[in-house]
Structures are given as C-alpha cells and as structure tokens.
Length: 310
Image (tube, rainbow, N blue to C red):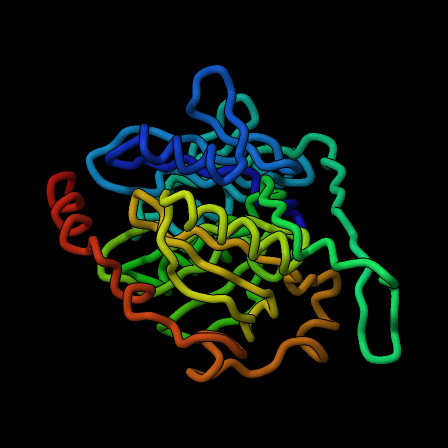
C-alpha cells in the first residue's frame, strides 16, 4: 500500500492546561514546549493547542515513496478538491469535517517492542509457582497512537476523500453509520462515523496486552483526571480489547490491544472479513455502548463553536 502509517494528530481544546495534565498522567512524555506528546514507541504523536471548543485540526499520514505525493495530488484534483505541496508535504482539507490531512514521506520505521509475560491456560502452563505479573499495578505509557475516529456530517463524502483522494483502504464499512479505513497494516487507522457536527469522536492508543489496558484505565480514573466511558470489552470489528475513558476536553480516549492486522488485501477480503451488521457495531462482549458514545454530552458546545466559524 502506498500509505505507510498514521503519524500524528493536532487537536484544539478549551482548557489546554487540564488536557496537558491528563496526557502526563496517562504516561505520555512531552517536549520542552509542553505542547507535543509521545507514547513509548511512536514518537511525538499529539500536538495540543488552545481553542474555543474541542476540535481535530490535523491528521498527519506517512507515505512510502515521494511519488505517492504527486499521485495523491492528482487524485484529489480529479475529485475537484484542491491541495498544496511544500517541502515534500502534501496538505488537503476534507470539506465535510474541515480536518486538514497532511501526507509526507516516512522516515525509517520505528522499532516496536512489547513486554511479554507468561500465561497459563488449560493444559498449557508457562507460569509456575508465581503470581501473574498482571496483578501488580504497572500503569505505564501506551505504545503509540493507533487510530482516530472522526465524526462527519457527510460520512460518505469524507470516506470518498480518504479512499479516492488520499488512498486509504476499506477494512469494514457499515454504510451511513461508520467506515473503518486503514493506511497501514492495522485494521483501521481512521474511522469515519456519522455525526451532526464535525468532531474528534475518539482516539486510540495501543497497549501491550489486556493488563496494560486495564492498569492504565484504572490509574487515570483513580487519579480523577478521566471518567469511565465504555468497557472493558472486545470489539467485533477490529477484534481488539478496549476500554474507553472520557478525557477532559470531551473526547473519548481508548486504550486497546490485540488489533486485527491486514497484510494481504485478497486474503482479508476472502477469508478474514465478515459481514458487519448493527449487532456488530458495538462489541462482541462487554457492557453495552453508552448513549454518550453516540451523542456527545457537549454537543451543544460543539454546535455553538462551529456556528461561530461557519
């Protein structure tokens, strides 16, 4: 695939100081400016700005080859959309969400490591005469930004921009409701969900395993910097374990592990992918999706914010 991976996002929030404290409590590290934040494997992947209302400003995607940039520019022109290229970075804005997408050529891939702990199961005993390491609280930084979910008032228009313009691929699609798109081997890096106004519905950080997910979520709730949102559970679409927390700005943040990986498009379409219906939109097991996950509590503020800049 021409695209390589999700690199970073830039967000605006009404209380940057509170958001900064949340990121630090989540284990992310920051630079000298206190505005860029990194996990343990992905580098600096979130840039924070002060804004009147919460908003996803930019999504940065990495490409494999310099020729991809000109191809993407040509495809966008074919869709009647403008783009600009400067210093090898292509920039284009999705008309429906007004999110700016930038594409640049990737540097050398970052090596990823994970803590691996012995597991016991029926007839399979790796951990003998000792407790599981997962029972010991070990909240630690998540690994990397895995995906973002963007609310769009024109879901099919945004999906067309991402697929026909930027070159994303479809992993799963429930028309009119949500589309899961990939620019890497992860099942999805950007998902687009139907929304009354543009919004960053949630963004997700990869963890090593279910204990990493559980300890991080527990620590943030105990510290009083986040509220329980939805989980613990396992998604049908993407297959990942998940726990969503409501972070200070009003978006959901997800800690996840064990996501589907797609390395062969034909194999996925013929053997891996299965039909997705309404019963699959939420989860395979775990608590039911809360209403707040569909209708954000700050919807009126989002409407007011967008009305001011429209």
